[in-house]
Length: 242
Image (cartoon, rainbow, N blue to C red):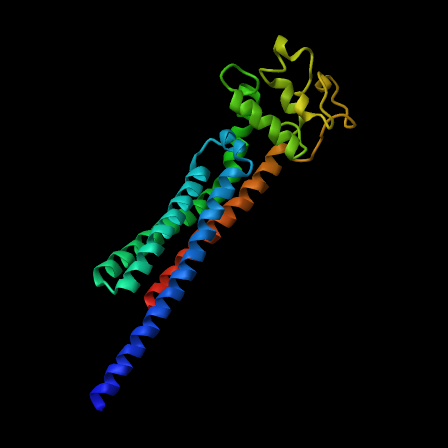
């Protein structure tokens, strides 16, 4: 009778353990979905701006999150198979992948945080030069499109102000057709509207496009850092308890 009771107790504990692992897998998948979603969102939303950055750290952080999120899908499936078939070897591989994913997410979060600290300095050093030297130049179509979208999306003109365009290669060229700013500075874009730089015609924002772009990127970097480090710590904590 005692042996039968022990067997029943052992079966009950096994069932409970399976349910706990399934719940953990579900939470693990949810965290992975959040990581993957943030990575994709970062690259898709206004991804044109990446060509204006001197460093690739911003994009690398997002790609790392996408990699980590994709691994979560595979690892979660492996965990389910390991629980159903009760194979210790599969569980060992499962927890190994948990450790790898934890490290990947942590790296993405730390990269985002470090880049956040020097974002302002990088933009001040490189954005004005990139806009003034590369706008509307042969082979620089991606930068030209990025600058046009930047000025329209954020309703700004020039790196610091509209006067920055006065020293640009494009405005000094014949191709500008006597424009004083690109047409994308205009509140309502029409052909050659950039010939008139009156505040009623073009965007004159204090701080220029640098301030707007810096705030946009900083918000994204904070989300990347918070999700990467936060989810990594939560997953590590759960796997330790399990």
